[in-house]
Structure formats: structure tokens, C-alpha cells
Image (tube, rainbow, N blue to C red; front, top):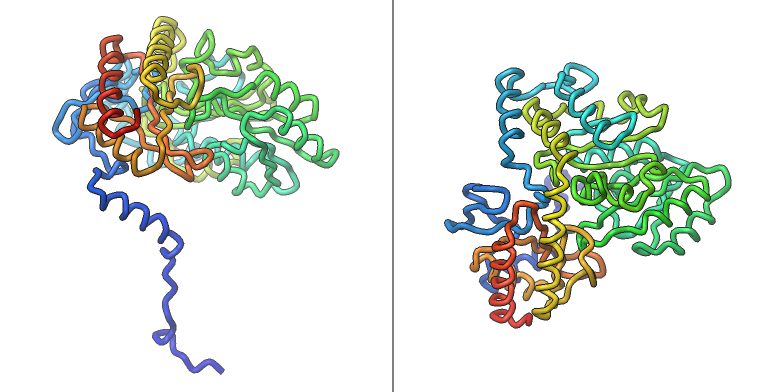
Length: 409
């Protein structure tokens, strides 16, 4: 018989599972580098500049691909919605949380993608979590790229489907996994247009063909390609001519659209039932009126943003070539998106390079394992359509000076 009282029992430290990460962070900060995950922007001046640590800094790590955050029409729409509808809805979409603006932004999405249905979530993470967990459940199979975003993995886990990962962008491996799934089982293939760590694109045309040949539905996350890639900015699926074969497109407002929120568009005739069965949609307060107003205005402007898309491609090609010529190792041999990943030798030197760039007046993302593939440490750059050619040249000089100072080049 156990005579110990509750006060005699040793408390289990539920934080002990994080000890290795705590030690890594402590060791990194002990070298004297600035904490790269605690940067404060004291004032944002434009889509491409902000005041960080008291100095004007060029922003090259914000995913603000199309530079819509300071668009005058977008800001005006948000201010008007605040005046007309107040600061928030205080309710979910299925109760009191659907305002005229929520319907308007869903209509803007339907018009943008040319699809029948659109469903807006409070974040992009929730869009993946909600859609994937609801349409693929126990007894179903999800075939997905091993480098899929955390929100995709979490959606799989929440839905309790059998998860079958395959090697990144490996068409043959994906086909082998599909052919092993039992006959008659529900199958969902989940892909991304642009993978956010290296900025590489998926061979969607071939992958979608194989998925359909094997009786699978297809979901493509176009978070990092919407607004920029494709003739109309609809993403990689449009660019490769297979958008009409995609069952579900997931996206976010926090990249090219320039605000916050997530969405799914679809042509599936039964899609509207998702509003009653998708728990992250049903049990979450809806986006504030000012947010959906800015999103709707931004999306409609992105429909006519061909010149911005052209300039962003110019920026991406110019910086990719400049960094390659300087001797940096990049995540892709050619520019494939607005993301340019600069591979670092290790976390310590990556943090030193990040800090050296910040001292130069440049902000980029420091990405580390386990978020990155193959245990890599990356400096992730995301270009903006509002970056001028002069700024790209300045950025190149900053990388050269910082790289030489740290010994990366």
C-alpha cells in the first residue's frame, strides 16, 4: 500500500522535454549574439522598411510579397469598416460572426480563383487544420510531402487519418505510396505550390495526374505563391495549367494579401457542408470587420497586379544571381519563387550572420531545425514587389560585407 501523501510525491516537470532546446538557446545567447527570435519592430515605415533597434532597416523577411500592407485603398477600406462595424464580431461564423464583409471577401476569393465556393478562416494555420482534419478521418489515407508545413501535419493528426509521407518532390515515391493504399479507401494527396523553407516549387502537373489516376482527391497549399505566381497570380497550379484539377486550394491572407486570415476555395458540389462540420471554423470567432475589408480590397487589386508580379520576378532573379556570384550557397539552383534561402554552415554561424546583417540594416529570417529540411540552418529572404532595384543592390552589398566579416564567403 502506498502511504505517500500528494505532497510527498515528486512533481513531474512537464517542461523537461524542452531541455535540449533550452540549452541550445542558452549556448547561442552566451556567445553574445542578439536573440534572433525576439526582434521588435518599433515602427513600420513601409512594406520594405522599419525601425528596428532604433535604426532604419530594410525588411527582407516578412512574406509581404506584393507589398499590400500600406496600399492606400486597402488601409482606407479597413478604416471605413472600423467605423461602420466596430472592432470585432465576438462570435463564430455560424452564429453572429458573419458580417457583410465576410461574404464580400469570400466572393472576392471566388472571383480571384474562378471557383464556386470559398470559406474563410481566422488564420492560414486554421484553414489547413480545419479542412484536412474534416475531409480525411479515421480509415482514410493522406499522402503528403515530407516537407509539408506544420499546419498540414497537425491537420492530419487531428483528423486521425493514416498518414503516408513521401520524399520531398519525389514523383515516383508519391506514386508508390498511392498504389499501396487499400482499394476503396478514401485518399487525399496534400501538396504545396511553393515550399516555404527553400522556396522551391512542386511538380504539380505530374503529381496531380498521378493522384487522379489513383483515385485520390488533391489539396494544394498555395500560401507562398498566391498573388505572385501564375498569369493571374493564382499560384503554381495555375502556372502549370492544372488548377481545374485541384479539389481544394488552401491559402492565407498573411502573405501577398497583406493582412491575416486563411481560406479554402473549391468547386466540390458538397463543399458548403464544411461550414457545419469543420470544428476550427465552427468554434472560432470570425475575423474582425477591418481585416476582412482590407483582405477583400487587396484580393481584388491583386487580380490586376501584373506589373507588380513582373517587378517581383525581376527582384528575385537579380538577388539570386548576385548572391550566387558572391559565393553563397542557395536553396535552389535557379530562382523559383520570391523566397531565396541562403544555407549557413551551422546554427551558431547562421546566428552570427543574421546579427551581422541586422547591424548592416537588413532583416532576414533565421530558420533552424526542426523547422528546416535535412537539419539545415537557413537565412530565409522573402522579396517584395515594393523593393526597388536600388534596394536590391544595397541588400547585395550588405550580404557581401556581412558574409566576409563572419567568414561565410
